[in-house]
Image 1 (cartoon, each protein chain N blue to C red):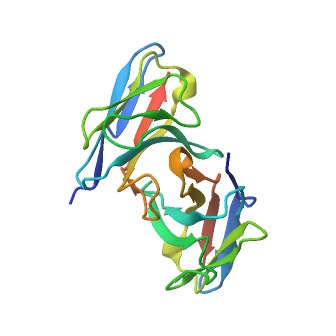
Image 2: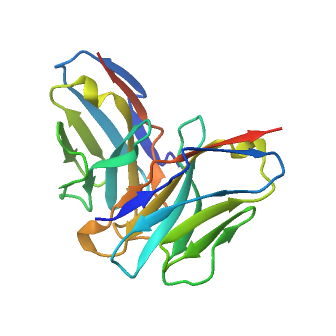
Length: 114
Length: 116
């Protein structure tokens, strides 16, 4: 099984450019998440989707939008990239929102905004 | 909101020795889950061990065990017989069991070095 697939793995943007990070899972999970990881900050939740058709803000949603396209796919969009959005982005999924099961993570996207 | 604190940015252990990584958390809930994740240089997040708050027995997974002190809101990870492959960032995480608060909250991580 592929698990959670993120694309692209690396991206360089100029300030003001837009882009969409793609995420897909093949485990029939209901809940999906976008995290960003910055040095000394750990992983912080940007947005999450408890189930298909719903999305909610996490800890650091400003500057981002998300779309839960279907049960498999959950995309993260930067409308006007800023240097402060330079980070590693992780998509993750779980069977449900309240499970004690582990999160399945993608391999991350290294984003640099110049 | 729940918070997770890892007060040790870096730790070092000699191969075959034992090391303990600290984690404390703040919550008003009585039932929740706690996790330790490992992130090697490959960036892949790997679940190491998990603990359910209503279980008094400390979880163990081979060389990894936890010391869960619910009253003190402490959840430390002990790695026994440390191996070079244990070198990584380790993240403590908290997960509520109720409604919309049920997202995973991570600590800031502890970088573990393993020396010969």
